[in-house]
Image 1 (cartoon, rainbow, N blue to C red):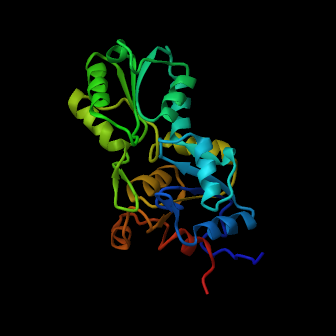
Image 2 (cartoon, rainbow, N blue to C red; image 1 turned 135 degrees about the vertical axis):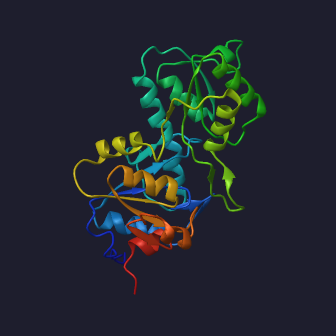
Length: 270
């Protein structure tokens, strides 16, 4: 197997936080050079943590997709927002009932946190907590029930504020779009939002990684770069998802690194 030397940019770091959508893949296709970049990081004995705001799948689903698209990965290397939601809810006193706007994966995380799921029951609009995450089968009825529950006093918790996520045919509405609809209808902001750029995701990442220099890599200025900066980490923006070079260079402060792709960031060129 040929050696894949690292670029000077990433050599000083011990740990690399890698976003998934727009960084490793778009939709169901790996981005050019991304698999080689991950292989090079492993060859150089850098530890990797895949940090994702995608709330549609369980951690095991991300491992399967990574392998299917040509990336080596293990379950302990996945830090999903769904798992972070579960941790945050488990720390919340009182337990109670929950109405979940989201995929079955998110429903399972909420249930595993100790809350009783009331989706599809007569008690849905009287839930103690409403948890909002984007999913492919979202319907208006979910928005209506979530709104009524919040208006009756339910605690509103958002998985993320990602307005969109990249797909091959263009940006698709994300969790943030649905959360904003619930907040607007109920006239109240969420009491807690879990995913990047919020600190809880990065605190969990530090706990898993241990000591050493960390570089946060992603495709969104307002999510990946902002979150890493708030956590006191260096940031690398890749231009394969949600940002352009003009936007990146105009940012104040600018990311530590700007690269056309993960491959261009990680692999020594020439």
